[in-house]
Image 1 (cartoon, rainbow, N blue to C red):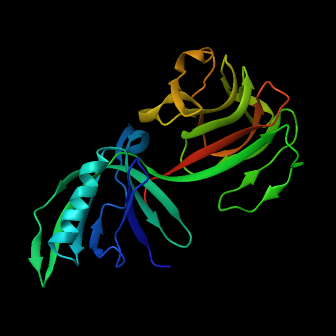
Image 2: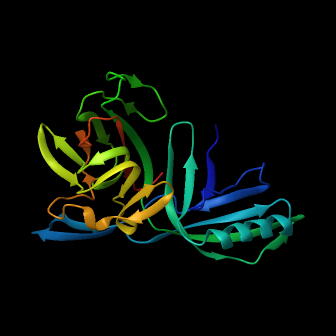
Image 3: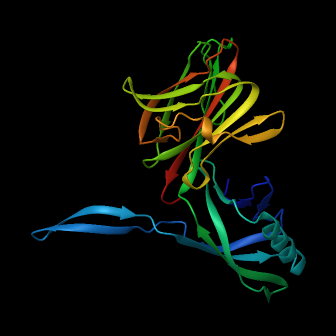
Amino acid sequence: MIRQFYLENKYGDKYYFDYHNQTLISQINGLGFALELKYLEYKNHFARSEYNIPLTEITTTLVFLKGYAGYKAFVDFISKSNDDIKLYYKTDTFNAYCYVDIASLTKAELVSGTLQSTIILKKLSLWLKERTYEIIANGSSSGKVYSYSYPYYYSSSYEGKAFIKNEGLNDAPIVIEMIGNVIDPEVLIKKNGEVVSTLRLYLTAENITISINSIPSKQEIVMNAAGVVTDIYGVQDFEEDNFIFLDYGEYEIEFKPGVATETICKVTVLEGYLGI
């Protein structure tokens, strides 16, 4: 499989840069990384004291094989996408995305019967690779492990447990979903048997989906009950972390739904990578 690029908006619409969509990428720059580094000097020896990851750009030339009709279709996609756009990079061995803003799209230039435009994307995040786990508390799967694209672990214990890991950079945000019934649910993150982070909500609800998103620019706690989405930020235990980040390494996660009926907890770790 050759490498593949495509955009996805917050509505789930995708725009592929390939022959099927008659839109090709002739060259692309900015897939690596740049760091802003600071050093301390010790008598002609230097040690890095800190680093920042600056806002960078991805620049590429788009070739619209359908001419103006293809260019217009892409502009329409951008216009309705607004924000929350992801740029995906996919190969046989790696699948990741980063959040981008479309900063500019040059006026199309006619070249050999096609239209060519230069697009500049502001890179708003690291390259993110999702690793998703699923715990079934009080279920009947009896601890089986299934070979999905991402590792899922099923637990039938009252306090469901799974082993998760972060193989990317430090401070990987996680997204937690609780599906079913809950009474004051908790999620505990342990490393070497010691609790290092906790999520706790003061809430009693049935047949709901609760989502806790730790991505710094998108942090929220919401509940979906019969299609009605409610902000429940205020029900969290403010003495706990709640928005959880993982350093590099392996962890045990423990889900306590607070009920004896089957409840699902999905945990997605967003591993961050500097370049691809």
